[in-house]
Image 1 (tube, rainbow, N blue to C red):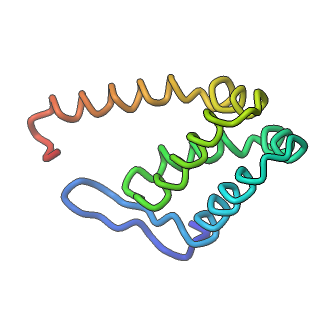
Image 2 (image 1 turned 45 degrees about the horizontal axis):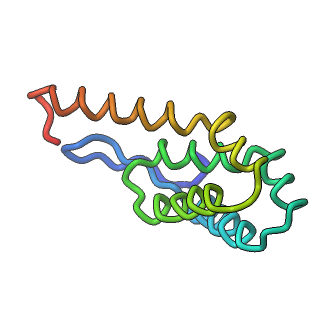
Image 3 (image 1 turned 60 degrees about the vertical axis):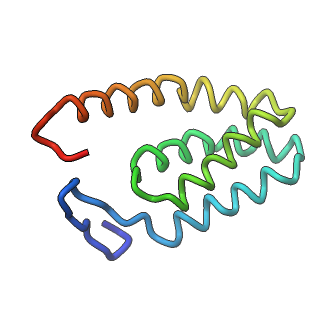
Length: 117
């Protein structure tokens, strides 16, 4: 792990640290999305930054600060005028599939009586 930290375990499972650098990059992404420059939106889409934010969101399921930032990314993408960002969210980022997969995994965990949920 490049963050210098190891995973922390508890009764729910292992929690891996996100790291300040990743968090600051997502904060920068939120700030950039607020500018509403189409060339910038095209570059964000070309670099696959929206799918990468979703990857962090689903990889770090216990990081509430990250989740709030990614929620802003999603909200600004949905309410903004950029079709290229919407394409990045729904097609490259597969947000609908990922939400349904997460819901399915959650239902399986809740059905497993050996785990505390």
